[in-house]
Amino acid sequence: MRRVSAWVAAALSGLLLGCAPSGLRPPPSTPPAVGPEAPPAVLSSEGGAPAVAAALARELLGRTKGAQPGPTAVGWNPEEPAIGPLGAALAERIPGALTLVELGVAADEASQAFSQLDPTSFSSLLWLSADITPEGAVGALEVERKGREGSTAFRFEIRPPLVFRVSTRTPAPLEVGSVIATVDGTVRALAWEPGPPARLWVLGEEGLLRTDPTDGKVLQRWNRETSRGPGSLLWSEGEHPRLALLEHAPSGSRWFEGQDGGTFAPAGPVEGFPMDPRTAQFLSADWDPEAGAFLLYDYAGRDLGAFIQLVKSAGPGGTHFILLEPAGTTAAVRGSDLTRIPGPASGASALAAAGPTLFVSSGRPPARIEAFDLVDGRIWERVWTSPPLEAVPTCLCAFRTDGSTRLLAAIVRDGRGYILSFTIPAPPG
Image (cartoon, rainbow, N blue to C red; front, side, top):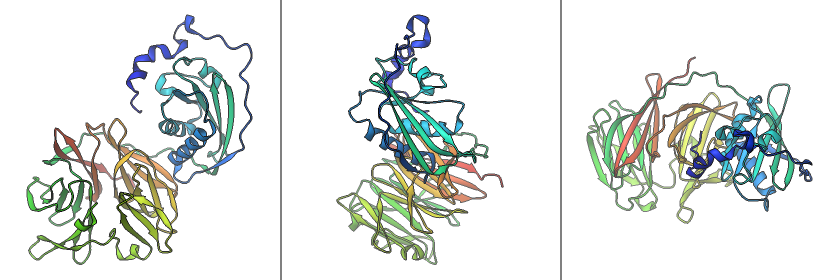
């Protein structure tokens, strides 16, 4: 549940007119006028419920321009479980919106819910209902907007129908991550060197460190030459292991290559965003200083979007390249046909991937990390959530080892960077 803002928390006692008999608002003598129904729109289900909710929010905000401003409540019949994920995701994408669940309102239809809202606190109610296909998917959404000025109904088709999927996994216990290392200042990026012996690379404000993850000891250190701001680390496994340091000042981006004796040394400059040989046949990306991001193109020169971080997931559903866009939104590019699809989250601050699982650090309070698997090529299923963290992670790193997935996350506390370690058991089967 998202954190309710202070003004809402302070006013909760006055929001619900149904709390005492004297507070009930009598029903109007005549029902609110229903405005003309807008032509149906089609929402793509690529990306699952988060993507449908984002598209729905854009449609609703565009169609209700000029309506009475103010906080919005989002509700649905709790007996329709397929709408729950859509409604919660929609409320996250409409400024000032809260779900009826967050407000403690129980209702099975729009008028009943609207009568319980204090008109001085909420200007409108968005009530969602769904057309369910015989297969149990959401084929269309009916959205009724109720406000002081009346009611308006909208209908949205969903193509293909959105499959309502109940996770069959047993969530892993939420355990606070252990601290495996600390450094001065903000940790900008992390990279795992598989070994043996395994090493952890840490990009700080002033330098690049190669460390022993068992005790945090610094084995090698290089000063940053051109930047103390954001940067990226990419580990490249091959005949000659090497690591790419990507600075936002392109002249500072360079390779570090393995040497005899197990050490690493600076090598040549990094041109563009490094891709493995196979991927480089189809995708390329160059830094755009004006956009402050890499621009991704396919082999035909088609623009696939801008990103500040790109990670690759690979599993039974194929390979996907997931982009963290400058605005904190996420998108994915399917490796099979280079089609762009929505990602699972917005408000993201960092990404990591291990196998088919994508990890997303949320920039929205409370600070946390969520893990998603892409199911059926289009539905992002949440498979793990971290406990609340005391700060938003500045970077993530994930890898598989000994039948489980290990996730590293860096946070800042009192001017010092702390690297946390989580172990996520592999799913059964």
